[in-house]
Image 1 (cartoon, rainbow, N blue to C red):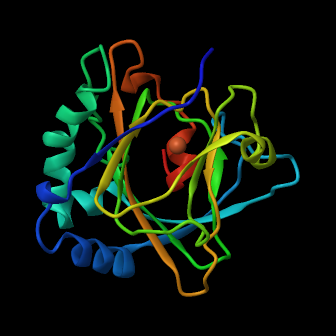
Image 2 (image 1 turned 90 degrees about the horizontal axis):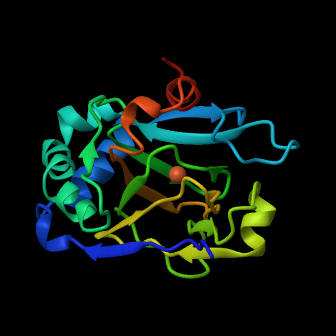
Image 3 (image 1 turned 180 degrees about the vertical axis):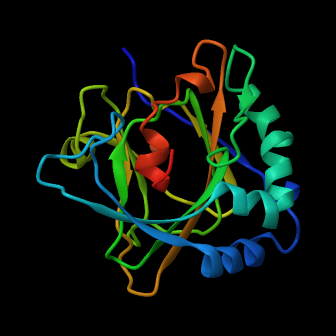
Length: 216
Ligand SMILES: [Fe+2]
């Protein structure tokens, strides 16, 4: 039976002392809003959902302004991702989506229900959200789920804890991020794409950059 699972590392001791304030400042000043229209080959939304508003700090900005995070992605974080795979693990050549920040504010936003195209996803949580506060990552335990309701029917719930780095393979498991409960709540996660020879970067769907960033 194929069932979703994830691996978690507490990496606070690998991060600069000012990591949280640097990430919050970049998220505050450089985030861009976009309405995702869930028509990508990776989208898993019900037909009634027309758009999902999201906020992102682009990968090229992360590379320039959070150089330590870019270096960790290509260095120690890749090494930790390697512990989760029998195949050689590589980072993305394309800096537009190698490591980005996903930002969520207040109860109006959630993240799109989708499957991943990359075999290993890394998430460095930059904010903490206790049970009941919203902002959980919910991943279907079954490969059959294909929208928010079916993910919620039988899903694994990951509570974000700042400084935890998690890795998982969600190519076959639909997942989304719940809304935050409080009006002034802010959720930030650094999302990282890793690849393997059997699931390489060149297999990334051609429509995905346009879908996520509005450009090819
Ligand atoms: Fe994902």
